[in-house]
Image (cartoon, rainbow, N blue to C red):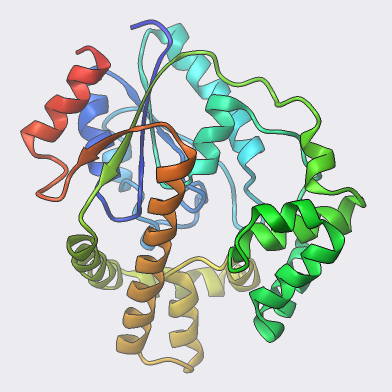
Length: 308
């Protein structure tokens, strides 16, 4: 299967990773991380990445791409992933991309318009201002600085509103100005993309179960070790679900049960945003995994679409 890419995307906790492991084994493929949290080598328990034992069974890539303190970007990931995929093609294997970061996959499949690099200090300040004044006020500021971007974004789209403000502040140019430039070169391949879908009520229950499992398997202990290693500030800047709550427990500001509830709620909110993004932004065949992602019908549906 020359230059075939399989991409498994979808909301968090839908079972993408388990399916990717199974498909990669069936396709004699290699698993490629497409998740903005799983790329950090220090983060294991709270990200849902394959375990070290699972990663030892067959080739895995980019699950240790960055260290805490380094900033992930879609463009940087796409360039790294393109190199990985070209290596797979040269070996005659199929890269199986898996993750919930849709912008990463889009960057590799379609290429991104160039934008100025992220500025950690500016982003941190904008986030603090957003916390104090609200995202609607930040959207109003964007309306003054970049009215075209403001019209294209929902007033409560915190992530994109703050990024648009950051672009203007860092570069002095609007998003529209940057997007007049040509996109970076995408990865040319036969793309087979699938969105794993789970009914929302079922997914909320799975999220709660996964949260319990992560705490039981050592999320708090892993976070404590990162703090002891001097990684606390880098971890806080990441605003990673689960690790934020674990830090609050370690500081004494939150009880463990309240932390688990907060983590499950944030995860469910993330899943809702991801569903909306994938529905409107990425062309992918929907695969219903409500009854279980490793059901033979799910696996066979993907393999048939891939041509195996």
